[in-house]
Length: 81
Image 1: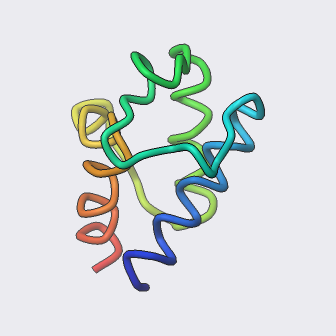
Image 2 (image 1 turned 45 degrees about the horizontal axis):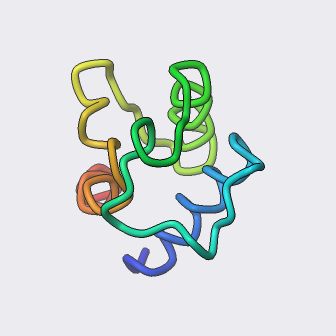
């Protein structure tokens, strides 16, 4: 999977979890909780959605790797192999 395709999936799932977020405005350095105002339940729902969509397991110890789209992409790419 290409980084662009993975970013599109990440943003799509983010917008499903938090429909008030405009996907076109999400930057790679936007912090999901601080900048985009996801609460902890929304964040967990995003982790679950990524697991369902990509088959990637994200343990609690790895949550910081999903803090921004810019951090999430290399982490998810590595997990996808």
